[in-house]
Image: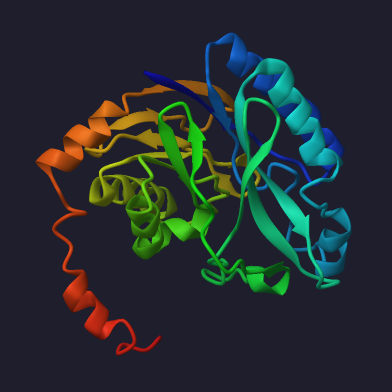
Length: 274
């Protein structure tokens, strides 16, 4: 069994306020026997609508900056892997990447993923402050777990989860800041279950709570069963992943093998964006 700690937090706008509780949760997760702790999107800080792109860029750091360095030191000390998120500084003076960082249990940065799909929907426009990434990240390993990384709005794009599954992922981590609204909790729960079912893998989705966010951090198994739904509470939830269930599910329900990529390829460039 693979023990995962899901952290549901309510970040403030100040990163110096958000780091100490994160470090405390890392210690708590280790004390509870977790091999990995997964944090939500916007762990570094939330970015309210009133914050300008230039202000957010001023908050951002590089992956080798002090925020990730503190997490790396905590991972090394506790011998635990960490999935965390930052605003990553980039060449554009007034844009940042929304970046997930996988830190291994020796404190090394094993994988970096920059959010592909920006949330320009439901009245939001992340592209005013963010640059989109341009590739999926290499899988991160944790024991026999092979984790793909997505971020929040990516969950609405089944192509991405499928690419990670085809690359060999038996679990997907999706740190999120899912915004409140009509049917948004239902959308959230449905998307997570669908991505797990259609790919025969686990989906671990830590979410922000409070402020404008829905909470309900979740873990779902390859058959779509909900292992955890944290509702509106802050803190940790420990779940156990039986990774042998992924292989068993994919043998009984071989969706990846039954794909008709020969047909799909004919239409890959035919249908235009609308």
